[in-house]
Amino acid sequence: METFHAQRQQNQEIQMAGKGQVQRNGVLTLCLPSLDEKDPLFLEKKRLSNARNLDFSFQLRLPSLRGELSLILEDIIQAARILYLNDVEIYFSEDDDFGPFSLRNELEAFNAVLQMLKSVLSSATPDEMKALNELQNVTIARINSIADQNIDKMITKKLETTAEDLLLKWGESRGARSKVIVAYFEGANRGAVALEDINVGESALEIPESIIISEDLLHESDMFKVLKEWDGMTTETMLLLWSMRERYNPLSIFKEYFETLPDSFNTGLSFGIDALTILHGTLFFEELMQAKEHLRQQYESLCPALCSSYPDIFKTELYSWDRYLWACELWYSNSMKVIFSDGKLRTCLVPIAGLLNHSLFPHIIHYGRVDSETKCLNFQLARQCKRGEQCYLSYGSLPGSHLVMFYGFLPKGDNPYDIIPLDIEVPEADNSQSQAIEGFRTSHMVRGSWFSKSNKPHTYGLPTQLLSHLRSALKSGGMEQPSLVPGEDENERALLETIISIFEPMMEGLGERDNINREELSWDVKLALEYKDLQRRIISSVLSSCTAGLKILDST
Ligand SMILES: C[S@@+](CC[C@H](N)C(=O)[O-])C[C@H]1O[C@@H](n2cnc3c(N)ncnc32)[C@H](O)[C@@H]1O
Image (cartoon, rainbow, N blue to C red):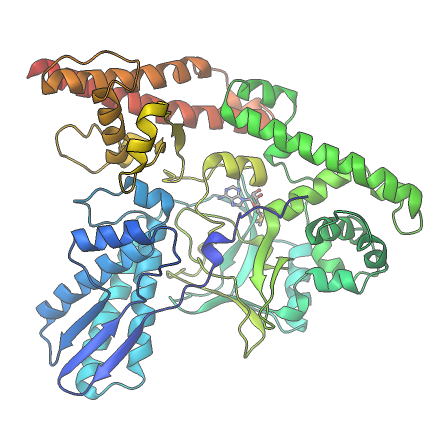
């Protein structure tokens, strides 16, 4: 088995917060972390910050007027946004766009600013303290103002829970601390609800390292001596096999945890034939089939042999295909990568925290490192969660296809990471020439054109990088599409027609939207249809933008 994907790793990586340096000459220097040369996006971020004349350290003259503070804070926020852009956000960022780029990026940026201010506050003089407090208050107010556009209200079905209450009690008796309770929500099963107002920087949950399920438990198990000798066996697969048995162990110390797990996970990996038929023809269908096939092969090569060689350890009735798939879905949809207090990164199941749902506008964005002093994994808030509200985690900047396949849902709201990849081939002759151009890429993408903020002519709601690539490919005659006639409008027309010729067949492949009543359908068919609707919406927005572009050209 491969590792359980990068699903939650990306946004768990703890980024070093900025530092402030105090100079006692009436000037306070505040520093965000500097751009990291090891960051694969280093060059692009450097280019963006240079284009905006932004630096990562800021001189604050003291005492400062409110207006001066606001101006400097604006610069700090703009720099922080660039620092925390991810690959999709950076691809779609336009040179004249200073942000916001996404809700995730806003939370990262504002929280980095708060960290930076916090690091100087403890040693600040009264004048400095006044300015820093003002900056802190404005930053928190800015975070709260984004929170007003809450996109992810779910309908609460039921507040009473039994197994989950027992799990919370079990955790508390072992040192866990929680400011949330568990409730049932429509379309998401369980989720966590704040028992009180939880502010930015406070922890909703603190889970002791000692109750986290990781490979350490495996090492204590009789399974380990067999599995460690098995050719090609990974730690993740061992954990998966361990959890298949532990689930039914009445003496397990994690009994309360296993009892809260659902009988079925309903992820894309469990899609039945009808849902698969709906997806047939999409790229996602191919990915899903490959993933299922891979798991099936793995099961066939492993479980029957283990059961016949070590029947005392691997009981046939516990190692069926259905139970193997259940364990795969458990680890895909619930595992987290955590750095323990010994500095080692482990793939884990984290009791109680596993009940937190995902949102595009999460409260918790970093949860990947055990605090070395308290030996607890803290789930700290990047934005406030008011009493009674559902408290959300970020599982990562993931597209709908990944969320459907490994988690079995599509998030509410417009997902900026729902992209359609486009690999544009460059003829051999142009290849060496093109690659000499800095920043040249052949892999491009589009997303819903409703995300575009650009009002500039000839942008059509599409990414500049894609447009520039196609323009130069068309100019050099490297593409077969409509031949170019002299004149800018003609070139633009050819460009838009080329894009239409890429997306029209994709749209046709998806077929017409059906009008059947979806209420009665099974969960997987509903989800497959929802996924296809999303693809149609994205492609249709691209086609409409191109058609609108053509109309403008016609009218000029
Ligand atoms: C880590 S668990 C979270 C707890 C889960 N709701 C439960 O009751 O076990 C991940 C699963 O929760 C569900 N989930 C998470 N976020 C969701 C969301 N925004 N909408 C719908 N379902 C969600 C999906 O079924 C996903 O596989």
